[in-house]
Length: 316
Image 1 (cartoon, rainbow, N blue to C red):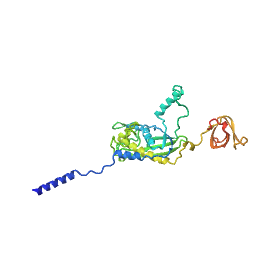
Image 2 (image 1 turned 45 degrees about the horizontal axis):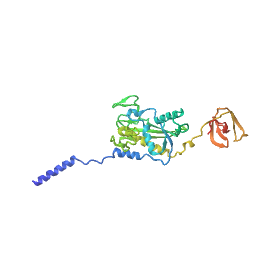
Image 3 (image 1 turned 90 degrees about the vertical axis):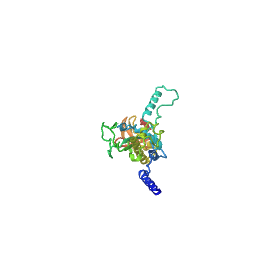
Image 4 (image 1 turned 135 degrees about the horizontal axis):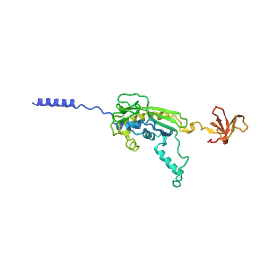
């Protein structure tokens, strides 16, 4: 009888073992993965320059229920320390109102608000979605013009797949002075990168909620877009690492205007050979060479010579 009981007990254990198999080791949580991604954003030992962020013309984020990626990128920029962030959005609009009040004499004395105080942006950063449609499955929003996806998602978005939770984004940096595109970086994010636990996240409301972009943390597609932009921003900073810290000095000199009729001379001397007469209002391009009051310039057809800085209207 005892043997029968032992056999029955053993069978019961066997059934239980087959029913409750050990669970596999779980993947890293969304909190751990987003915290890891945040930690991978490069930190710079010096500022590359002053940066303004500009929204792209196509407001693709609205169809996904997200805020503008401008706010998201501001979080990355501030964390990395790679740029001095200058506001050209709503904050700047309010600042301009204060400056207008100061100019009109409305503000109290001693406010110290006036001309020549606003810092110039060296670079413009534009966050966008990669234009090439590489649908990896599911419902891809790319190519839909004004249509709607079931579930209420509006369209004109390129290269974001809602069903498979993938996003391909692009960041472009433009030099304000030369209009050169200094760097373009693409980033990719997918559900395999984040693991999705809506409401979790290693960023915390201090970074996202306070910035008004909590929907990038609290929605699945928002988390994917966030990871894609982290990927792109990290690549962008790495690519820009070789730039000089003085974008202003690196840029060509500003064009200047001849204030009154004059002549272009071969040498920096009042008795130098006259290369050509010049009319008032003529546009000239300083080469960067100077000799006392003389400035070497080139005209619009390539003639190069010297003029007195006293004859230039806007030379600095």
